[in-house]
Image (tube, rainbow, N blue to C red):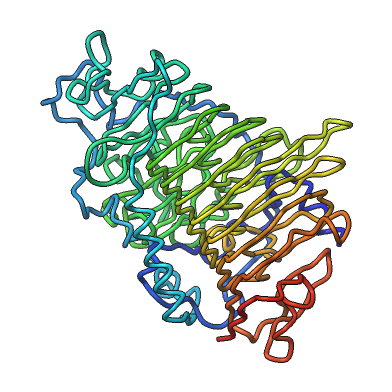
Length: 542
């Protein structure tokens, strides 16, 4: 229990890194059309439990302008090619969600196949299609404007306010945006940048085709020159003075394993960063000749958002801190977004403690009105979506009026995480009609030292809540615990109504309720009904 409490008191349930280097590197290519999940629940990855003594050094120093070869080209005409931007066809490898399937873990030998049902699979595929086809509905408020951004646009006077004369960069659009405006990115276009949103400004998409895409990685390192420095070790400039959270090869074909000392580099795709360089172990030769795309993800948030704002139909990928970060906000909305391969960097400000972190969509502190609908969030080091706060003295917060609906959350170490401490409160929280599966089966679980909690819900142990309800969700498979929920009193535990729990039955434990672990097997089929009170639960054993 002490270990559990300490875990909750870390920002985002941040886990001390004791074994970054020698664990098996998980990955995926996330699309539920792949079908089956992985087989037996035993943890097949190795863990040498090296003590992580490297300094965090992850101050967010990367420039928001990201000097990369994919610059949208300030003051370029619309006919000018954009150097370094991948050609974005409707089904190309950069944006086709079929590359993000669960089967990659199986192909790598990290897991065995795990079954699903035809009904769950059909629902997952329908939800995936719904997310990919979310309509563009954000509109300016009275007196507001659409501000258009596209590759090949022009950052300057006379541009930005018509679809055929867009700005080139989101940064420039934000300079002129004001509350009530909607900044829209052209579908099928691509940026490598950070976005610092403005209060009262909405962010969406326009045109036809795939969702506009933003990478936190500064460049495709497969296009850079790598230098061999030692036996099987190659280096390339990181392009940033900040820490590197993860490296993704060919969009999930392989995932780098973060090491804290150069001497730990011993197996393929181990990496270490120092002095503005990234060092990668590769027994098969130069990484740039083995892969067409290598995303080196700096420890910096990709998007920071303010109150009375939101994002619709953006794809946000490849960052070493949070995908979307907010603090003490009201009225924020996310709809139709795709967020993946996030986190793994060292958190600064932790003293001598070495902590890795990274959530897909996070609110830290108070919130009043926090909505996530029709989103796909996957492969995050910590949580897929989260609302959390640690009180300091009497700094209590209210996290109220929260809605998570019709989302596909998978392969995050915790698909949903929530915790507050002290007298902070949750009120009017509705989590409904989501498909939540594979907690702990992503790369984040396999690259961390503490592997006790790979779960679909990581619920705080001492929360005070009112009207906090999980309704009609599908929870399928988790590495360690199906769900873990808590509350300051029994009455503070969230209510569960009509949910489906589907999991391979031969596991050590099923879920954690107020610090107590309960078995979920053929002999305890009714346990979700009797313990958490979901009297209409649908319980499926594989």
